Image (cartoon, rainbow, N blue to C red; front, top):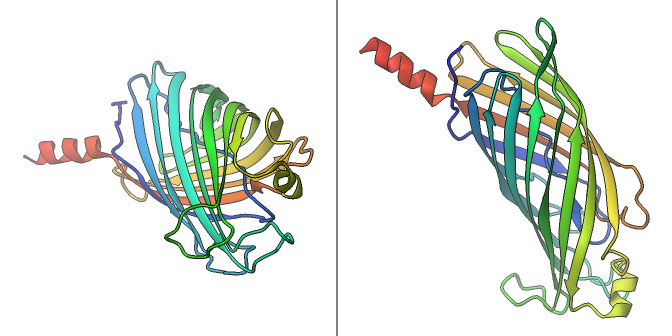
Length: 280
């Protein structure tokens, strides 16, 4: 089989979440490159947005960002892969949701990166066991405009936490000529290594942010990936669904994005170039 280096895959993502207080964590999207021949490569890009537009301080009125992912098959079994994710969100609503502390306007910016490897073990025709593992880091930023609701003024308070991550992801991949189906679970350990903030100690306690530094949040994410090739290998459509759960949350359970979905459209430029070359 000829290796297929995929061009940038543009994605529109729709993310839903359970919202209470300030967010400090969003689990990375589970991915399965599904490369089974040495020399295959895939590079993908994600553009994400949220369709919700509530202004009650509970639901986000803006959630957007992008992901960059890449993978390369070192052999028919081993693949190295990496990802860079960036998300930002804004919230608006009534003042004093937590009396004396909560804001009319909050801004979030989450940036994470990870590197890892996956193994493709053919169990039987069309069925692969596809475990992967890796780690990375990230920075989670909160901008709190406590005293001014204008979108173009400074943040009165900021809260930044640095994250160290490690994950294992056992999964199964079912392949057919025009469709792939992936099912699995991503288990991650997420350690908040350092916190920098100008919230006072009393404010951090009121917002349940006082115990964040030095804590570790273990999460599990059940996921499903459906990839189809509608009539040609040049076009690749992918749907991803994931749902997070706590393995042990402590008091951090108020600040996590729980669910996400993404719809991906991909193009194989090598296939298109080869077909064009054959026609000429």
